[in-house]
Length: 138
Image (cartoon, rainbow, N blue to C red):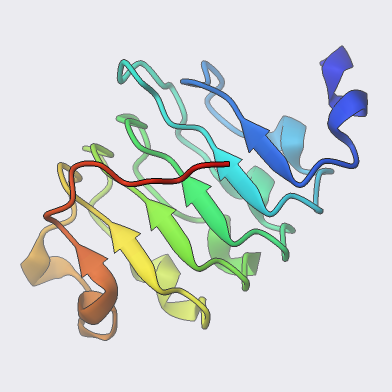
């Protein structure tokens, strides 16, 4: 993408409903702090987050409506992550990857494939299955 050079110094990225299955194209944007890949119509094809693996500054990630996302592998390196929106990530069943993120404060799970009885007990106190509208303003 030619436009990536223009956002090289930016700390925010907003894309409505990425049609890419992975985020490898963004892997060099390690300075990003906030990423909003929310799909307003649920048409995101995103399946792979490994392109985010070196984003040590990332503290807010919105993946709402990423209905094809089945794994959170790739987030292991996002040690500054505080909030993640997984609302309507229907294929996502397991969030164990989030156990290694020491700063995590909120996980929004309404409409995801993650059920309360399969959520790691260490994450239950920050998991939210009720919220329908989450403010992830960038």
